[in-house]
Image (cartoon, rainbow, N blue to C red; front, side):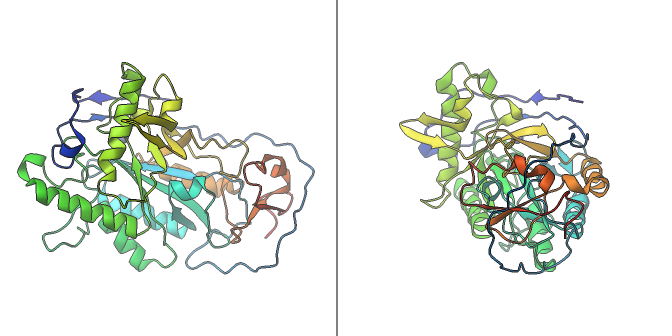
Length: 381
Ligand SMILES: [Zn+2]
């Protein structure tokens, strides 16, 4: 079932010079859409001739914290969760602080561990045996996501604060989230702005954004481009507009990033593609190239494993954490454990159930050893 829901507040098309971007955040923002993804299980798969590549005898370490207890299956699906605002009442685009923390707890207890989109698409999934990756994407740099208290500490009731406290108290929850930011949207999506722009001095505002970006980068999180102010790319007049919205968005975030930081991920506003789809992956703005390793959709359910032949890094589906959505997904993993990615604890190998051996994208991962683990993912540990 797909339901689309979108309301546009307003969008200005006029350009602002790059030098003004750090202070002059002039643009309103458009929200949003959603869809319900299918909960259908996987179809039957043909058994393939298993080939076992030589694998070294490194013994994977036991997980720190809870694990799934499931056998390895690194062709299983990965949930890329999508969050928007923190607050109540809950809906498609609001998650309460209590339930956001509850989501972390439930995932941890079920043996999930966070990785970023960048780690997912680069196959950098270095998790203990029996645990599963989960990706948190946090969109729109909006209300409740990342606030600072007057003493400079992170507001424990913002998403960043909840994450930090959870990480401190839960050994093994080591990774970060992917934050898809809007550098020039209006309150309450004004780049983690606690208050409307007019109420905060430019220098204070910029300094707070800088501290937040520094914190995220230094603590294993990822910054992702979500365009300048959430304009619908399918509405762009021409290719130049598309590249400006993306390129200028990237430039406006870059002023806060380390010189050598590579923005690897791009999230499509409202999941809408430009007419020329290539421009969501790469393009040129003001003579500077942008290019991404991953493009995020807005809906679609769990993603294929990056090691699967069916994985498309330029169209990664996501799961909006609407009321009940995560519960349904976790219930499904209990009844269909074979659908879930489970790590073998060995980053150099890709553990594959024999029935799925033909699904391994060896061409894309020539340096990874394939390790066939058993007849089905429900056997073999
Ligand atoms: Zn968005």
